[in-house]
Image (spheres, rainbow, N blue to C red):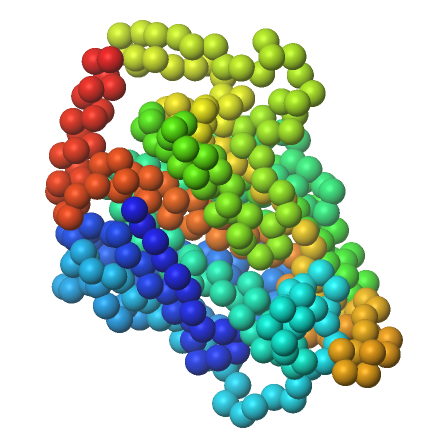
Length: 377
């Protein structure tokens, strides 16, 4: 199984991630990781920091001559915008952030220590780890894509991710300012972001992550903590600002009859077992069922506002306005990229758990044997 941990802080010297469980023999280079890091920084509504930081990764261990060694992979992203001199203490927590509970829990009156680590800047390290996981999945022709379906209450006409024919369009989504398939809706979303910026406010939204060409049987129904939907939900919900997640039809499945929700099963010699619909979002009983995995996540508005909300000074206990910091007005498109990374890590982990070996070659042999078994089942 693949595990990773991140370190560093928002305005420190850098961010770091250590990833273990990647088999030996996988081709890795910094260029591929840097492409993913650049994608995370894009999107209409991002802050000025995206123009300052040009995220680049340095591989510190686990890769030799562009091939993984099977040992832990350590990646570093150095911050250009790091503060060499100590900054003054911050005593007023921002509503909607980790500031207040973090300060109380860790006994810190200086909130700066909390937000330096709680900051969504940490997701750069996750995206770097996710880039490695994506490279592993590519060896098995598994693709993970995302796009924005809603911002500030403005929705694209309808979701089309359940149809494989849209894969080509989603692949080009990074050419769009908001990574949205519907151009008319996107214009309205951009206008909403402009309105929020003018008022010193922020907006949230919804993005969708889709996993294509997934094999049947990842995850398990045997134990609660091995269910793939539970692991994916936890991974996506761990992203800063995410407040809800749906799989497939999601909450709408609670509003329909069972006959309208459950995906009927069919069989043909060419395809084997398959479904004509995908309301389950590719997961049944905690396991992948061979259809595309579809996850939808809701991101709340950024809590740092140019027009700050009311708060309380931790030292004086008197009313105060929350601090005003450089921050995004909207980061939903970037959150989709982070969502891809987190999903990639969990899917790659499930793949190594089921087909794992010390080397990529061994893993592929196990996988090919399983695919043949499924085809003849």
